[in-house]
Image (cartoon, rainbow, N blue to C red; front, top):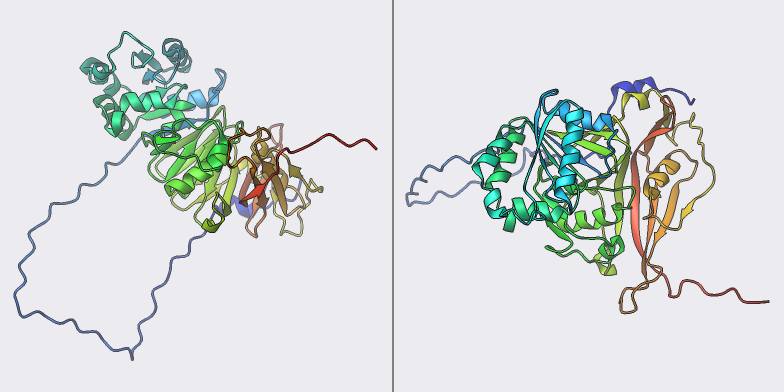
Length: 445
């Protein structure tokens, strides 16, 4: 076990420090500017109506990265606890699912195993016998939502949820009832598609990450309006590490003006409550683009100095201050700081990743980098068999993860397998040309 740094127990770690610009001091010798007064009387401005304040949200939003296991007591139990604990009433929406009845029934059963009282609502396009326009206005169903303390969305196609509850961008009475539950202190949770709807902007249908990197990001197709439960500041994506979706989240954040993004891995939840986020489960990646730059003259997507953090169970984020606080178990473990004289890296060989968008590759690269004597890890992403008519068929992308002076991590094996927290590593994404075909037969001597 590496040397312990107990001082960190009391110090949160800044993901990015944003110095506030100071106004220049006034000079005593500087001439004063005198405003000219008009000789004509200025009519009094009529009193303006007060601007209504945004309602305070007392509840919790819980995007889950998909593939949530039935035996994940930590996540299922947390959802019930956030709704008030044993006896908390839930309504379940199987709206996104291809088989909404079976999907909702499973979620109902799993919530009830943890002490909740749950009921599925018949709100899904796949229910051919349901008039969706009427059902989202049905007073009896809306009362069921209003009397609940928790709302759960199953997986499937997220556009089904948005198209049913917010057609044409206009909230239905049922969606307004869900928001009422949330504002009053209830929990709104969703897995997979149910997580995608949590931010103001969501991926509607973007199966190809490379196509997103190549610029295919059209509103109404790849992108759409979400329901916005996590607020306007954070773009959420799901199945994140398993499917290499940082490669689509970062271009979408850039296109839509987001500085903060959170990618939630499968079988993992992110609990949003006010400005605080806690990771519950396997892992997540927090992305900060506040210092990132691009070169528009290149003509295709490129990025420098994205700031990334890899988080696991118990790690927290303060969104307002962009501070990451590692779980206490990490702080009891080993501090991984290349600038420390006591740093003893586990890895010593350089590493290059041939498919950076592969399963868990970005997480593996971040853990490797912070626990090594290497200053960077590089990797590629490209289409090995692009369509013949693709004008960008030779376009690939080089990903460079690298340490900065504030890059630091923690690791522990206190509970068995190695657990990591990694913050403040940087990422550059550079377009590169990969001639086609990529390979040919080895010539005979």
